[in-house]
Image: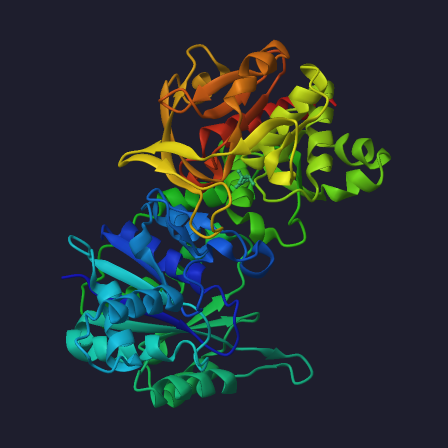
Length: 545
Ligand code: GLN
């Protein structure tokens, strides 16, 4: 049976629990264990699909079409294990299921309560679908002490009783702040946070202490004494220069060894960390630098483009170059034309990422035009691909009024709402004016690539690929011939030949638009071919300017 490692956070939010979970999973994996990581989100949204990227960062989409927390992206990138719908649950989804059961009468008249109904649902979620796994890591979102997370902590308490201490571990991530006036690290917040946890009936086994300065032995001993753990189980987690250095750092601090010791597992055989050494080396010792301009809407909050940011870094690792990302607000170009040249001229590559809504769209279209005319490598993703088609329609196919129905009524709907598409289960249909939540074309779909196209070459000669999607609109196939006359080639289509998946410009050094989100599948050890190729084109461009 799988062993369970629960990860909670205390003192403040944003301590990097997700990275911690991903790093520990990677270390266990490097010792040969099979791992899976799950995220429990205490908020009441059913999923993050309708949450603003400003509030919640990116929505990460899995192969099976779940819209999940961005931490699942870290999990995939660090372990290479594809996440599923069953790896992310929210309080909202649990309540939705319980209330649906209650309405059906499934509880046979019983009073439905947080304990046992909500806690049972949490436990079932943790225990489901774990065959063949050695370790299941469960990260609890939020901070211990939040009202919302109480049922999750209670479920952990029960699970630890039911499965036994030798089958479960609890790692609590805390902050040990440095008070510069006193020149000291302070352990009191950690003590309070652990007291809060223990008052809920849960004793942590390992404390991961985030700190800006090394934790002296005396403070480590003090934390151990007051928090009832072994001094060796108080692990210092200093800020790292790159997230990819975190597994190596935690290993050096003894985290994986301490976790194995807790489970009475012999930890004599050391993990094979060579692939981590390799990517850290590629990251820390680049042989060049390229600058990529990302023209988007949510540029004030890089978490909104988390996977994109990482995929660009991976593309850099593949080429052994540092990728400098210039986040550019598309609206800037709408206010002042001269900004287009001023901002974009220094770029070695231009990327228009995914997004929703009209705001900034004209600025994005202007960026596509700049990249096309100046022959600067251009990568359009999802909305970016749609905008590359609108730009092509307006400026190379003579369709002056070209637009997307996402932005309002238009006579030339180059991009329109998808109302039907094929899935493995059959034809999927949507009403044009339906709900926003859960109504997109989501998850992995196949695309057929044109023989001899640039994208087929980039994918190593493949003629069929599978990539993850998250969109409600599509490029209108009715305009295909006219757009192709304008120089855009439709080099990837859905297998039924109806939905455009990829466009490219054969007369341009590197101009690719994709309807899917390749960034979701890029991993540091396996940089996505489109990102590796885009960065390599940007590198060639950097030698020209
Ligand atoms: N807003 C566009 C659509 O729904 C693009 C979505 C995206 O970029 N993820 O089709």
